[in-house]
Length: 445
Length: 110
Image (cartoon, rainbow over all chains, first blue to last red; front, side, top):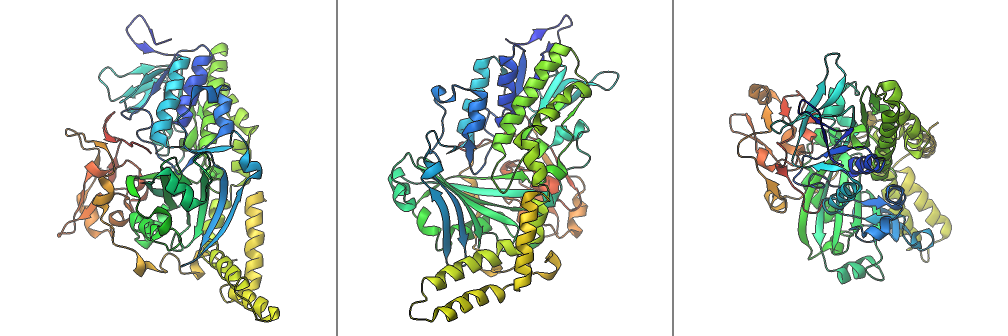
């Protein structure tokens, strides 16, 4: 199912999808499965070439697009069989992770992945469903008819105008087309984006198993690292184990990073030098360094999701939940819901904003808009409470350190010391306020 | 409740930031460099002279460099298209577009 050439030689599809990332290839696959012709336009050498994340993918979203997902032999790394938090002090680490139980399920709920490999495969699945992939092509603008209605996209290729009554924009965090479509009132705000930097470090699988306490290659770790990672900036680190590599990096609010005049790769190296982190990656070879922006504005900065002839999904629509590391699954499912809406719009032969508003209705019934709305104040909360990046991770290290060295001390003194290690950092009344405020931010009240 | 104003943020331990040669990191990244088109340019080079140039520190590949005369140059070949400068430049002084299709960063692993 490729393009239909109209009489005057125009390249015409039923649907155009911009960007062959997680959202785009899901949208293209579902559109093609619905019997429509779809062009999937990607600016990279191949799908995945521009994409990077921590990170892990979530099984529920992958299986929702392809019920036979596992039979397709996806190029995933290790399943996440241990997940949780590490809290770093200057020279210590409190480990709060879970393994076994729900994390022991097969297939696992999350899998570590490398995006250049996975996204290429993900796009190939869309091609097998009938999507027509156009790589090495950058979309530069929309094409509008005489009434101003969007009827296709212009690209940087000669004779590169491609027409369709519906365009699904999955362009990623740099929302150039979303702005051009008039869906965003303003550009990304520097306080609402995080800059993520990471090193992918090669290590033999056996070494990874030994250092991370994993029984074998079919076990993997995903942790969020808080505390002495971000030098007090709003941000967190991560560690993910791949088959023969460890992905280790951090994300910090771009505006704070810029104000502090800290070089992100130096901050990353400082984290890699931490006495609790360095032994984990010692002797490893740098496979790849990368950086990417993460749109953390969520609900408050979300563009309008549709207009006449256009829908937007994934990072371009700020579909990220920073606390739960969700984003890839929202992108995939939003891509699918946009595609379902496009199919219905073709049946109705109505591509107006009113017709495409079905997309938003679909998202509002699912975790995507429900969660983003509930967490709408969380980014601002963390920004305004740097104590969560500093005071509490340090306190946890001090408290547990004292508890497990308090031998021969009266326990009354021990507990007094523990409480004082908190109150000398932050008055108790403020601690109570922090916890209540955190609860409110998470509960969305 | 605390706010930014009553806390010192982002300065603790700054003295222990390690020296990192960003070129050592860039060696691990694959690029298809477009020899015919520059995708990043300063709109008004003079604006940068008076600016305190945060781009020089926040750019994750160190593409922004200060010349002796205070002007800024961009090593666009190192750009990984993250968009930080597009969003963060205090004067919106960067003409930022994507490289032509197929060019630019090409992650091997991502």
